[in-house]
Length: 365
Image (cartoon, rainbow, N blue to C red; front, side, top):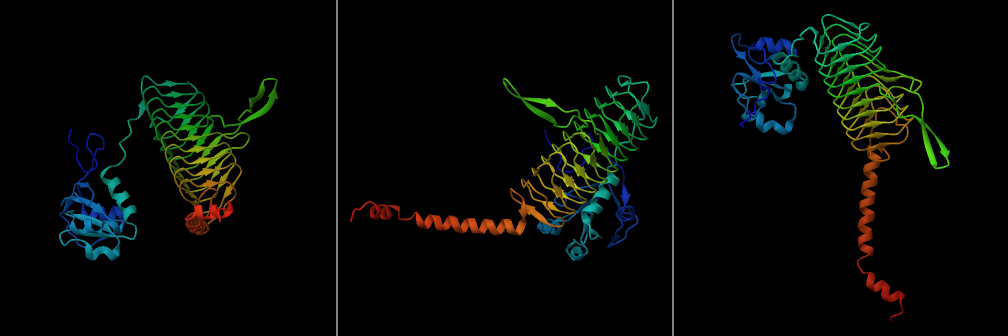
């Protein structure tokens, strides 16, 4: 089966438009290098394949050659790259090309409109409150006293537990489960996310046959502030005695585990397969790259950045970059790597003539 190299397959991504260059400039808050009120654009596309009626962008200097050769009708670029834009292409200059691209791409491909109403197969407790503007999909289950705000979309097979509150403009993906949670406005949970399940809490005692683990009741909640996104199959445990808190604007990737009582600040970024153990705290603007592991009861300071696969085992100061396991400041880590390489080189030198040394020690003179 042949596949188009242009994004936005109509089977999956309904498209709006066309839009004039003035529409695009207004949407992204930029000024075009040329102005042709009649020129219209029909889609977005990568530099390498875009045509005269398509919009593209460049945010990485590695692809300057693609910019030189592009046939795109308009390209979003940094101001200092306008002179590299081909003559037949309209330049849209901004210091944040990727942000402008996000806005223009969303202009062509907005979220699909809601289909307000409750699917006949959904099971809704009579005490639940659902705003009539919201869309409740097939086989959804909504428990007692749950509240669903205006313009929400709850995908097929999702389960919203007793007492859960979801604010306005929420997006709950297919087969999500949400319990013991208070969720703000404009929150997106992608397919399969698990919010509010028991935290990993137990007491251990010795018995005649060995250790036994006794579950401790998990009596906290999950509190998710406005504008949070949580990726597919990620898990956020409810608190044990306190709440687990996710701050406003935070983005959590797929397959992330957040333990009980964790507190995450505003606009943090947690990339795929991160694990944060119970009662740890991430202050505002922290970034954890892929597969970072955070031990329990540690604090990561404001705007700290932790590199992929690092192991955070103690508190980290804010405003710095960390790598390694145990995580340490990046400069210190790389100095250690250089020292280890030198030691390894010295080791090879020592082993270059082991037989001669052995002969001397065994009295073969």
